[in-house]
Amino acid sequence: MPNHSLDLPSFHQEQNSKIWASVLDELGGPAHDNIVGPTAQQLHLSARGSGRGVVANLRDWAGQGETIDAKTATSNMVAVFAAKHLFGHDAETSSEDIAETIDGFVQGLLSFPLNIPGTRFHKCMKDKDKLEKMITAKLKERIICPEKGQGDFLDQAVKDLNTDFFLTENFIISVTMGILFATVESISTSVGLAFKFFAEHPWVLEDLETEQEAVIGKRDDKNSPLTWDEYRSMTLTMNFINEVLRLGNVFPGILRRALKDIPYNGMLVGYTIPAGWTIMVVTSTLQLNPEIFKDPLAFNPRRWKDIDQETASKNFMPFGGGTRQCAGAELAKAFFATFLHVLISKYRWTKVKGGDVARRPMLRFEDGIFVNISKKP
Ligand code: HEM
Image 1 (cartoon, rainbow, N blue to C red):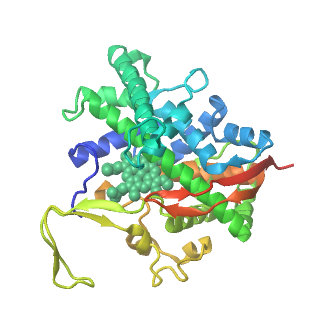
Image 2 (image 1 turned 90 degrees about the horizontal axis):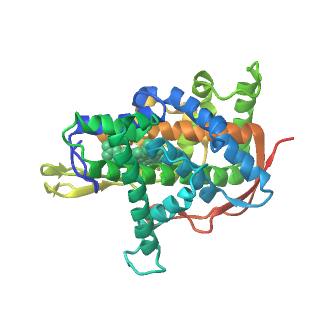
Image 3 (image 1 turned 45 degrees about the horizontal axis):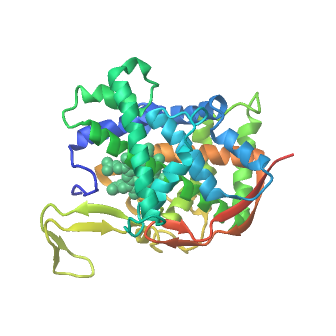
């Protein structure tokens, strides 16, 4: 598959994967295939240690006794998590409302570019400057004093500055900002969709509850955090995540640039995609193919038990495809599954209002997705 174009400087694939792998490494494990176990542990450590992880956030949401917008609340939780593991920002001790700043940056990225006070774009630019200043200060500090490192992404990037010719300080800052966006927007939308689908299809929740009860039932200590083996055993939860991503398809599609003329033999026989053109592969339509996904518009996680690996790899691409696919796929799944594990095993909730979605071009909740969460008795 040809290389694709993104608004990032172009660089060699091997180095690209290395820097992404280093992000994931700092978030909990060595590389794509192996990151999930340690990441799940990391999420729990974050939950227990800093008090701002999944467990603590759900406790806060339930403790508020008021309706919360699940998408916004998840965005805030993920923003704090990402800022800590990317550039060592400690939300507990900082006077800066990092979640608010990241939200302002993320929300305005795809807005009309009218840079006057009061517009979403103006706020995005201000928050972008603020974030870039914070990351720059941390980066300079790490370059001068590497021993102040916290085992986060910046530490790894600073180590690589000495060995990888393509890396510059500006590049590290751009990448950090890009990953902030990729993490916060994708995970919060997926969690928002989960609440929507639970409300619309209560039987799905029953399936997942049965699985989570079985996971906890096998433990000696019922309150111990999710382990790697438990995570791997949660088949129904993973099927649920697949189905959310199949129908939700958070990102509208993937971009590729044609490096040479490509003869196209589909519906437009005789048409050639000229070299240099950028192509957007609309993976969301692929995932609605009725020949592969029977009754494709129905939300049905049970369908995944009959879909083999090969069929899935060719027809289900929420994280993109080829060698440039999403670097955070395993992290995203681990975060999502951990969230569902804690939510389903310890809490109950009702949807109060909202849940309508639109694509503009990212998936958006038009009026939020509001839920009341309370602790299970
Ligand atoms: C539900 C969650 C997520 C979804 C659906 C998603 C989806 C995608 C998609 C479709 C792409 C384009 C891939 C391609 O062109 O083939 C992508 C790229 C990327 N994603 Fe994600 N993503 C998610 C979460 C994350 C997270 C949590 C991170 C951060 C750790 C992340 C980091 C990245 C990066 C760095 C790239 C660019 C990779 C490259 O160009 O080499 N993503 N993602």
